[in-house]
Image 1 (cartoon, rainbow, N blue to C red):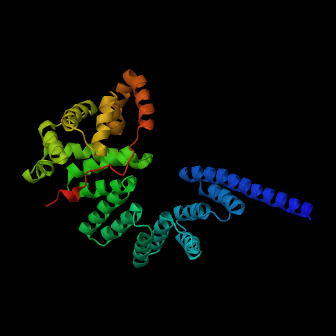
Image 2 (cartoon, helix red, strand yellow):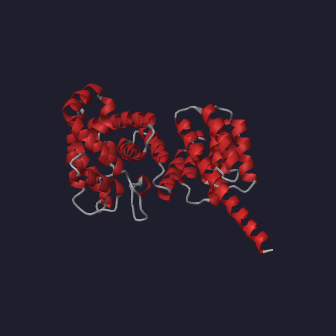
Image 3 (cartoon, rainbow, N blue to C red):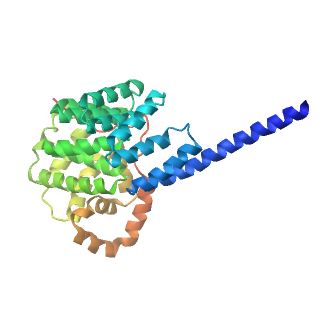
Length: 340
């Protein structure tokens, strides 16, 4: 009898071990598939994800990533079907609600997509990505103030979620709020790893400063006595005093340095101000600005890089180790807190 229990115990042990081994294999395969998705190799990724699902059928990530492949290939019906199955089976994650809502929207079911985002928020009230998606539905309905409020809620709930800043920067640029578009655009660039969107927002950021150098009206409205004790007041006042027309990255770098040096004199819990302070302390401010704006003046970048390549490589290493890191005490500029 003892022998039978011993054999059973060994069997259970090795079954559990085998299960963990299969999960580890699924994880490795899943990781490889995600890299393929990032490269746009969706069919190859789908093949690997099917393998991962067979090895670890209980993990939600692999069917989610598979549905993402179908979504990226514009097969929204299949994506929706897979995600519906996850929800019906009790699998719950903000990304699932986000992608399911997006699939419904692309199928023309806007009301259904809104209901899905709102349902997701009931389960995950801190999921900034869902407020961001709701904001996009408000833009589609031309309810712009509601969209901006939802995006600001997204920042408050999940400040590390980069796409909210992307949409806010673009929206505020179109609204001629160049000062705020620049603020949100730079935060996006500090958070994002998307090369295509990085270039897009870098060019938008350059346009913002170009507009501000010719017309400071979107800055002046925030140099108001009611804001005098705020860091935004100091920032707006310093930028208005230092901004002037520029043609080169070096000239814009000098403008920004003078502006920011005034802003960082006091201790702050604002994460963007502290990031500028850290960059200045690291003596990488020039490299940082060429990183931000290089696509706007490629000839200047190439000429500068020939002289400063070693210093720029040092900055790249520093930058990888010192990306924005939000804590529960981190603050960030929110336009709604300063609007009339």
